[in-house]
Image (tube, rainbow, N blue to C red; front, side, top):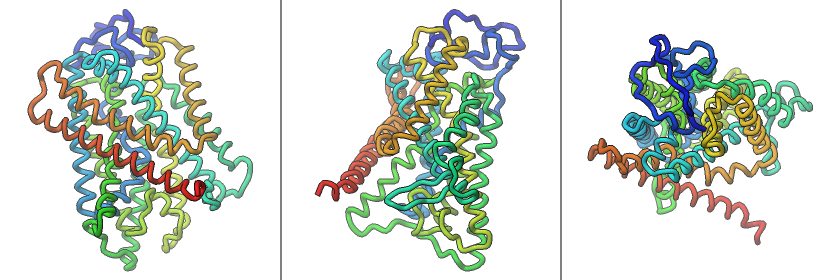
Length: 463
């Protein structure tokens, strides 16, 4: 997908402040708001809209795994680790934006292509596709589990709709997921600009805050009633295995802030591109605050009983008045949050698939048939994956973790070390090496722990 020979508007009404001239043949992401393509009048995305879209990209399913990181690391190291990863994320996005400006790129793939040629561009596209496709399938699986229930190891965990209305065909998993896909995912995925999702993104962030407010409220009630003990401040290390287990939280922390695949989409639509750094910092401040408070109060509330997915802790008796109602509120708000995250993550998936398959075609937004076909095909693929390949979790624990850290840290660091325009400082290079080392290490730990789990799970069958 290229921008072809479309000429930017030059009238003042449609100009955007602070944008450098761009290569008109850059793939992946045409800057539709700068050209006369028959769209409605669009003067650029607002600062707040960009903040909400980037924040929604960051806060996904990973938020529920963060309390377990504090369980493993202890309260103090866990909180420090979350803050440190926010700092590394800010620097990695800064690298992307700085080299994007230097090379006049308008897409992640174009930036990688600028530094490493066509192979770099294709590799970036593939990693974004693998990561986002896996994430969206997992989101759909979680939504089905929360609303319709799930069965594992012979035990059935009741979904919200099953609890409210009983077991019917219309509360079953397939119908609920299909209804959600047709009524929510498909319409929201049909927007051609990511800025069009700013209101649903704001609602998505608000729903994440709802979960946080409920967790804080429950914690306060239990503290006042003496039902919460002193949380463990530091990890307990007794042998090598307990020491190694500390590092299994690395993949969760490394992937918690991955949003880099949407940076160019948001930047390209921003009315004043000089605000991009402020957008990134505001989003990271907002998301880090939500992460820290969710982790703190989640671990404070459940202590050593905190599960890998803290949402599962809300499937039990909380021991407080209106406990079942609060449980349902937490789970429903989280499912609704993921529904609204879905189109924001889907947006770059569609762009990169089109860029990979049709690198020389005219912009996707100008070809309604290709846009509709791409959107329909990808949503159908995600739906089929979520409904008929339940082992997709295992597959994307390997491929998704690797692709996400490449997109979030390895590629930005590699671009900085390549330093094609001689603008990287010594500190930039040191941080880039640190990002690569941390990313590679987290991948090794993730792959080893997942392989060990799979082998251990299959041992009785092999015996």
